Length: 154
Image 1 (spheres, rainbow, N blue to C red):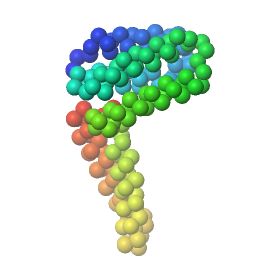
Image 2 (image 1 turned 180 degrees about the horizontal axis):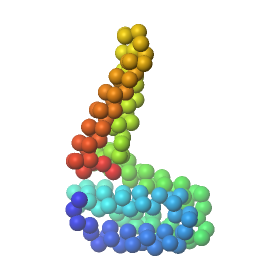
Image 3 (image 1 turned 60 degrees about the vertical axis):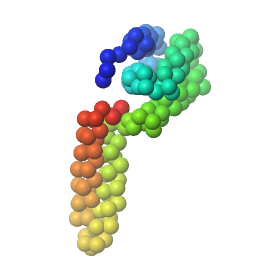
């Protein structure tokens, strides 16, 4: 990861301040995830115009949330989480980031499906499913490791 900019450091400090103001309610907003998203946006902002625009958007989101931490409505929470998911969606689609363990989950499901088919072919579902799950697990873990090494894991 490249060195973080002043924007990211300021946002991170603002989030820490917000967490102390919100107290126990802070965990409902997944602020740690918000900081991770900001870190990735900061890394891509020099090359991606949309990420650069998201920097200002994230500042506005944080200011709105900080305005009145004692009276946060469900609608504000829904809006905050929706904005966070929109930004995360951009990172996944445009920059190819994946969630940690995403490939493992996908390939386990595919392996289970293949295992059922193998079980029908062998006339023994237990053997087929175990072979399919093993295949899916090995492939998923290796793809996750490759993505982690390439720095594509969120």
